[in-house]
Length: 422
Figure 1 (cartoon, rainbow, N blue to C red):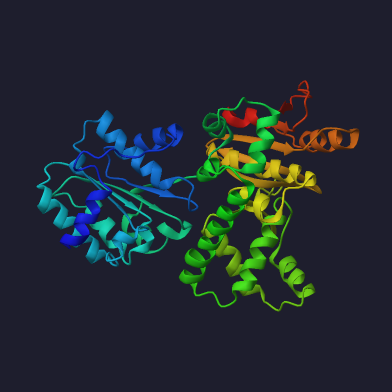
Figure 2 (cartoon, rainbow, N blue to C red):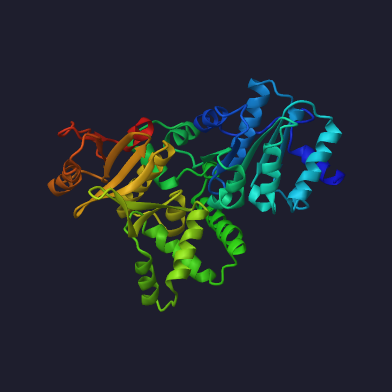
């Protein structure tokens, strides 16, 4: 264990090393640090390469610079690094942590940071044990790239003693800040094409970006899905990924997907397709938006909509066409509502569709999304659908028109960048 401990030193600040924190994501940092000094386990989940590791390091830096915590009281381990291949099970992790305490003679509260913790078998027992150990003061932060991280045993063990933060790629305002661009339609369209994965901002050519996204997709599919679930039909999973990516914003049912594959002479069944779709959403590549019946006040089964966690997967792997702007805009609005903490569903009212019903606590808003309000039919559809909702909750139409239109019977017209603070 002494050898692993020596490697661990490189990734901690015990000997005065500077912590590389990257671009500070202030909104997330503020939310997470608001739960400091509690025994709640802070759990960061999200797609690979969305910035979870940097956020953990930003929290560490915050503790050192703002809370005057001794760097020796911070223990960080990233299971993605080859240096920690020997840490296979919770007992290995416990042995390393005990070795660290003995070597550094740590006194007082210890902050434990475990990155990509799902790669350690039985990690749940370590987290549960140390988070509930009242003989010593510990505070734990863990991250993972699968939405099932807190399912099963850990959720039962902790039973409300954790708080979860879903980390999404950079939003438009962060994109502007990093790229030093001005807010407006031109920069927004660039963001809509580029997406918000942090590492993309440092790649200078389309080819490099495309190769990076292809590599990331393969990592998610091969490591996070194929290895974890022992996938038997990799070509089917690849085709399903493409199908969902090019059909974002369209109503999609499992039966529709099966029929599509049958038309391509690809045999499959409901159970397989349903499982593969679930694996892709568990890995945070796609989000599922269920339909909600406004009249019956219930979630509808069957068809739903899928949105990409980052548009780069579609734009760089399958092309960005002028006809895609409307769908990409809808995808952006969905993600932005999630970033703001809303639960988002697709509305159904009689034969009409409301693009989004977003709810946060007691607040409900309805949103229609259109690329442009460029003819009477589009205007009547977008505003007319909202007018059919007979309640007093806020209603918005979001579009990329150059003009900003006046309120229409209480319905507000917004440009997409105005959703930053809605």
